[in-house]
Length: 259
Image (cartoon, rainbow, N blue to C red; front, side, top):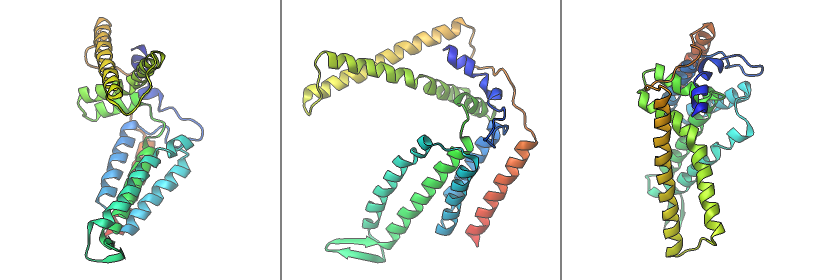
């Protein structure tokens, strides 16, 4: 609980410039709006050339800002596994232009192109959002969403979910360790299914109990549905330059799509 309240002050503190990171000093609200606009524009694109350009811009941005570490690059792996699945299934859905036939199996050009477009869009959007929001603390994102008009309950849900995911993970680890100590070994039988059902149920019960205790503790400390940041963020000339660059990039993608 104390960590959540202390992190409330990081909204302004996270804006302090740091060597080697060119987006420090840009207001989180500006970066959130930029990420949203970039995602919407890329979603509306349909030309393979424009999508390759959008992906290239995201890759160049990642290299220029140094936003993505090796761990963050690994976040693209699950997305591309899904893209590979689509690449294997969509071409088999039929189409007017078959490109390959192996017995009863026909690979259609339309499905293949659609799978490639989906892959380009997914990678460009995820990589662009990761670059634009990199190194923003979740408390900063939550407060920025609140000032942009997102309902307070949603922002609180976001903040507390991120804060207590680790707590629930440790609770799950303790329950699994207790099962192993009692001689439980998972298998493909009803005893295993029933045991994991009990595990999930116990985890949910403990989560609800912990949530009740947290609510009581917050009320005792005078919490009234609002976190108060210690520093107030303000728009600066850096935000204006950042906005101009983003608008220029989005306009270029739009013109390239129409051309």
